[in-house]
Figure 1: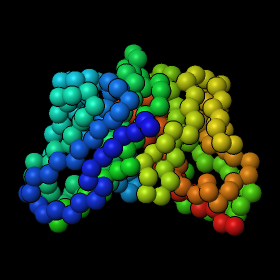
Figure 2: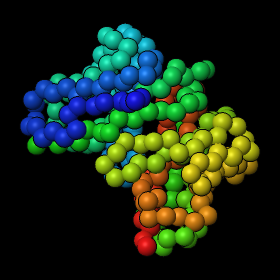
Figure 3: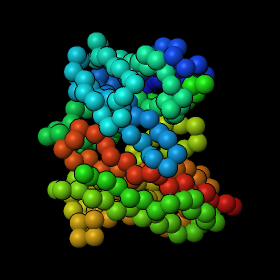
Length: 117
Length: 111
C-alpha cells in the first residue's frame, strides 16, 4: 500500500528538548516536504527536498532542520523547541515537480501533533 | 506573491443539500489548481485538480471548474452526505516547487 508514515503521531515535550519527527514514504518519490498546520493559517511549508542530499527552505523554516540522506526518509528536527512550534505537522511526498510546478498528487502522512510546554 | 482565499467556515448543511465552497486565487501566470480534503484525524487527500483554464476536475460527485477570467476554482456538489463532513482546502502550484494552500473550510453535514 502506498503510504507516507510519520512518527510520533502525538508528542508533548518541554522547551529546549531536541526532538525528531520521522517521515518515510514507500512510493520512490523524489520530492518530499514538511508543512505545519495552524488554525486560521492553513498549511505552510517548512522545508522541502527535490531529491537525496537536496533540501531547501520553505516559508517558515526558522527553528527547524531537515536531512535527506536516503530517498525514502525525510526527518524533521527541532533542535531547541519553543512553544510557538506547537502545531500539527504533515509530511508529504510527490513525483518530481516539472518546471517548478507540482502537477500531480501530493501524498500526505497522517500528521504529528506536537505540543511544546 | 501567489495566494489562495477560501470562504470561512464552518459550512453547515443538511444531507442532500447543494454545496458550494468558494475559492479564488492570485497568481502571476497559469497555476495548477487543487482541492484537498482532510477527514477528522487524517492527513490531506487529493480530491480533484485542474491544470489549465476551463478544465473541470471531478471526483466522488464533487466538481470544480478552473475559471481564469474570475480567478476562481469553486468546489460544488449536488447532494452532500454526512460522510462528506471534513475540512476542504483549495491550493495552487506555480513555479515554486510547493503547494500554496488556503486556510481551509470546515463542512458539517447533518442527517
